[in-house]
Image (cartoon, rainbow, N blue to C red; front, side, top):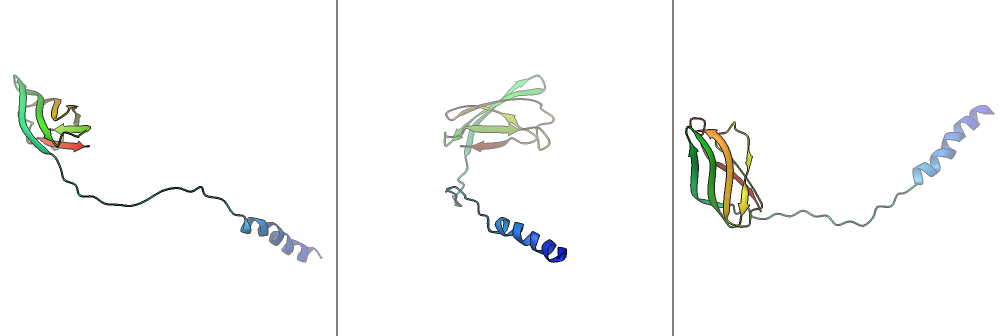
Length: 108
C-alpha cells in the first residue's frame, strides 16, 4: 500500500505547480533603426605649453551633441570635453611627441 501512495504524492503536489500561472504587466518594447549621420569637426585649435598640448578646442556641427570625448593617441585614455552649443573644449595634457591623431566621439 505504501508504494502506490508514494507514487501518488508527487502527482498531487506537482499538479498545482505545473498549472500555476504568473501575470506579466503590459509593457512597450520595440526595435528600430535610423541612419547615423555623424558630426563635422572644424576650427581645430591646440593650446600648447612647452612640449605639451594642454587643450584642444573645435567646433562641432550639428550643435546638438551632449557628450563629447577626445584622445590624441590610440592608446591614450578618452578625455571628457565641455560642450557649449557648437563649441567644444577639451583638457588633454598630452606631450606633443605622443600625439598622433585627434579622435573625437560625440553623441547627441
